[in-house]
Length: 333
Length: 304
Image (tube, rainbow over the protein chains, first blue to last red):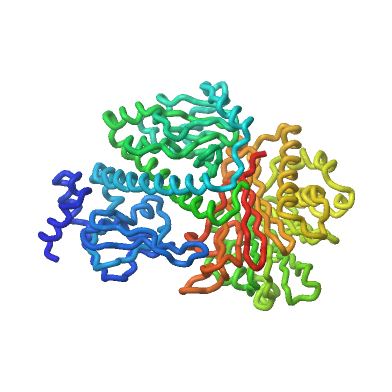
């Protein structure tokens, strides 16, 4: 394909439409055009992706080794779709394989190039990350809804009424550093909070410290408040709750960040329930802080968005595993 | 911190679990992927049930403090036995001269007269403060069986004491109750002694008919102030995979799909590719048992 033709094709893509001319020029100069013949494996399940692929023409199949079923097709992606991004962001293996269904033309943003964006065009990296994050939100909601349907039809134990009552009454208490013997310097050194240190740690100035007992609800489904939390001590459980039945997704320990899905894009509903599963010390950060960061300290916002995106992708992966578990295990019965 | 491997299903050459995969169990003794800070060099132990062996209901038991990757006897044995159930453990302890490295401290523990084996990955913080409070929860016949110095053997003795019969086959429900009761006893004694720091208790229990495994930590996320570099701060990992048969297919070791007659539950996947494995969530109890040559997997959230 001639480069002018390639450029025209690339510019019809939604992601590129969001890029400014300088960014687009840089991208087209450095990203590779790659071609795959029908049936060719573009990404192998269990291997790291070479980078982020954007489909310019053709269709790919997402396929995976599914427990007890062998290899099955899970979805197909068409022109304009992005794949391979999750593997790049978490620096881990792909959860599924990607196979060309037809002849496929892709733009490949290699992992190294993507990392280079942080230095030269962080806004472009952010736009790509946002696209990947929104795709991940869509995937999360689809899988979460599927799990909710399975759980609602399962003969699974419901939360005891007393437990529900206690949970509804238990609220985290705002405390000071002294109240919980927390050393601010130690907290500043704790990843990922340490990324804010260059600016006198604006996060710690804005955040409030919470002490929560076990079984304290922090984020509920359909919640409007988009506050985010960092776990300092203790642990928090993410779950899907349906008809008072709780299906556990994962546990977040010290150093973890969690937030309601609408923080990424308020068009998405929040589907995940977060409750403490140990007595815990948390930092609560109001959405206003993130909004201000986007206006006053965009570089820091980009760094934070990287973290949000990584946490989201990990959450999606655990939710996908829960989807397998609720059908293959006899769970909480 | 240690590594544990368990298997239940179609008879399998032990070598395919212990040596062959690219993250094989023996390799995990010196190069574990999912643990940092520590190597697992303080002993290897294995119990394995083989249908073709004499007294098939009882397992082979192999224990040594030799480094497993230099152990020629183990290497030879692994190419010969084809167990349908196996529990293996490699022991990792902190690098101090206060640690006791001996045969008596090598897991899995299996007291004479019982057919129930237990291996443990984790540590009870301040165990010395609480161990004698635990005595009242251990039946007389098991007190005298404790020969080593590990907290794990005490946990094993408490667990046996919660079961009404140990030579027979407890039901999934009885086993589940006994495991949860054991954890509750430990928690109660910790509270009594005001021990509130992170203590992981990943237990693997089997009698050749089932495998039960916990992924659990008491007071997760509460570390001592001088905690930096300690091995037991993370939530110890636990993974499983299931399918028709485990072996070398399409140029890699994995479970062949199409059925559910075999299961591996382990501290970490046996291959670098973990996408065909499921990570067991924290605070969970998993019990797998064979029913008409099919593995049934029960799982419960642990809320003490």
